[in-house]
Image 1 (spheres, helix red, strand yellow):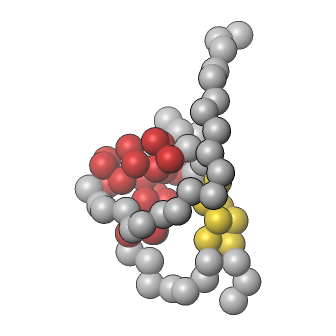
Image 2 (cartoon, rainbow, N blue to C red):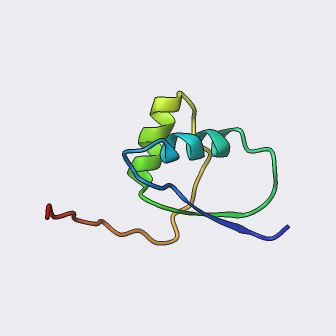
Length: 68
């Protein structure tokens, strides 16, 4: 299978919770590159009541937001 690249979407939306559920129940061997903030995924996992598998960080960046 080809690898997948997936984003978490809006950190305030349901994307992080949905992705946390997918990763926790993962029953396939396709490599996934997850694009998004780790804190959002962890918050989504807490909201979903699931434990995340070990997820290595390849690169991280702290982004600052500025109100417009």
